[in-house]
Image (cartoon, rainbow, N blue to C red; front, side, top):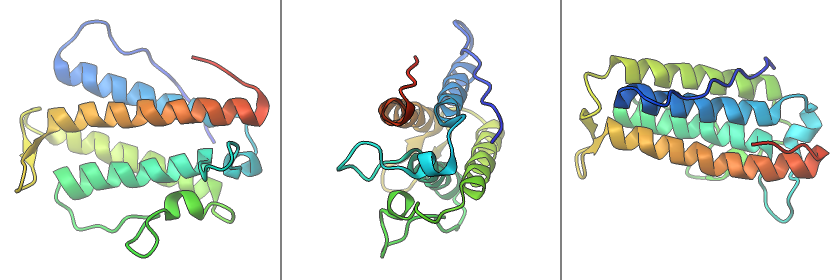
Length: 167
């Protein structure tokens, strides 16, 4: 697993630059929380009785990126990688024999795909959905919130695993 390169978001700039920089910062924070751990530690459900693990968070956020950006905003008909109607918590539940390398590669690939979708959008006002049109602006805010919340989980998991703490 490559070392996470966290870049502080700019303190001024246009809205798209600021939102995408914060999202990338939170993506890099999750990668940083996973650095230096063994595959077994990444799979460990370190805060019983929760099924959360760092690997589960990576798998979950892969499907979240795929769901919101690819299926939602881009409207592509793709399946989720780790969850299904018959296994809605597969992202968290099925980590015991999951390949750590493949999960991180899929997450990074999905993040790159999401970045490309955002870059190609004409504006933050572009919408998707028919019942309740949702803007790209809302989606980016939501994804920052999603990662920030799960990075809080990652903080607790990492501290429980090896005592490492950080921002």
